[in-house]
Image (cartoon, rainbow, N blue to C red; front, side):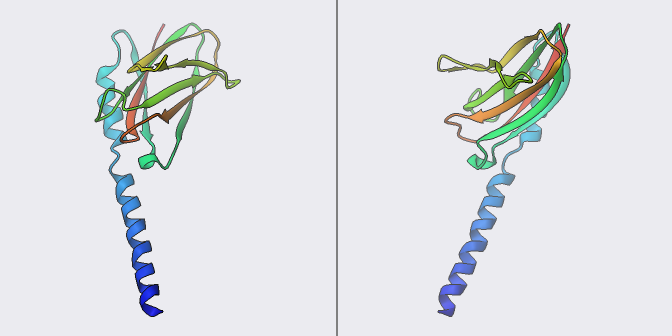
Length: 144
């Protein structure tokens, strides 16, 4: 019985360590910072977003930001793998109505441009569709 408890204890510790190690592998900060240089011409940098799905443990990563009327916003996605690695970015207005996404008709786009027509809070969500790493970065820029 004592042997079973020891084996169980070791297994739990190993599981905790492996989950912690897997989560530590996402370099979302570095990927978000690398995304700054990929901001579309004419757009001014506003903010980076870390996209860490914790190796698939998190289905969605969400941020909010106040957008201003008569301003265009550009949001791009960067990661170490394939172009977007299955990261879907979707923007919602203050009423949680979808206003833009980088995934359309089965195709992923590396970013999106949104012409804002109403000042208010907007929600930016990152979800994962067949993603290998569940990890990336994003940059928000604007121009008037």
